Length: 380
Ligand code: GLY
Image (cartoon, rainbow, N blue to C red; front, side, top):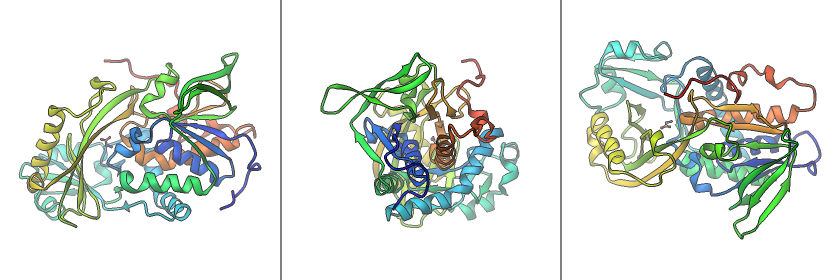
């Protein structure tokens, strides 16, 4: 497909640092706007976009304030965003607007939930109707019919990558960015990198997007991004055994169309970048399954895996211009990366293509609360 508008294809490409969901989504959107992009990616499999459960859950996650507004804006855009990816790639993304049920021990906890006004209140009978077989401890719930899920791990990431290739995005796999190079510490002039075949190189660039997820702070230590490890597993359930996502405290169940049940997730900031599964983490998930949907404890296990969410001190992303001119930030999405990919791609690509045209990107009301240098709560 030809680029739709913008500068000629031989304009200097935007360097996308990170080949995860944010990097791909922004590269895809830039390509749709007629800007060429090159994605530098160290190891695709470590991207949080491959690890996440794919919930689209601004309401079930109980977001509030600007995060809720950003999440709702992204949720609204997701059907059209997915349709564009599917059209450009020819691949399905597995979007399932199936609704999410949040169960509670009682009505008081339900009514105090931050997003309760956006959900349908359920009593025990309502819970049993929406989640047949739900554990006996849950007496109340909220149904967020507007929330849903997408099959990020098996479908979305592959489709997005194919869509990028179809629109002419270039990829350099196995490439680790070691350093941002600046002119006088103020303006971006390129990156120093190491390629898989060895050797260090420099690549010139005046515009780049930092989308390195949990690793973002390694390139730019002033960014308050830290890894929040999550362990997960999947089970094979009967097809259509569970219609809704079930979002319990500490454990959630995400049923795919074919009966695969994705179960998440631990939240282990103290683990840093420690690789691997732990008995405690896996036990937390098993206990959560038994409490939420006892029959699922007997379903055959399929896979177990872990990954690193990019956390920030206020659990909200860092979006917009970075501390170096020409460097844009799209990182720190913590628990909501899949949800926020659509709005992040739209707004960051729009800001990049508008840069230099006199448009004031700081005036973007959705992005303004997510500046990297906003005041953060002090560490506990
Ligand atoms: N979005 C859920 C999680 O990060 O575990």
